[in-house]
Length: 69
Image (cartoon, rainbow, N blue to C red; front, side, top):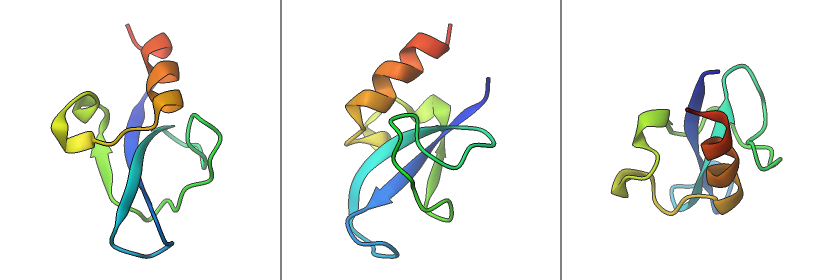
């Protein structure tokens, strides 16, 4: 299954990052269930666990670890 990381901003359309979330390809909400603006900044799933993708949603991270080998 393909995944990518998407930013959740403090204010919709704003420029201050709240946290990063993992989203499955083709889905409209983060793995934790939050509805995220799909036009927000994205990172490849390989950025998970790096400084580039911090702070990261704990729930998304835990679920992602259970889905990837």
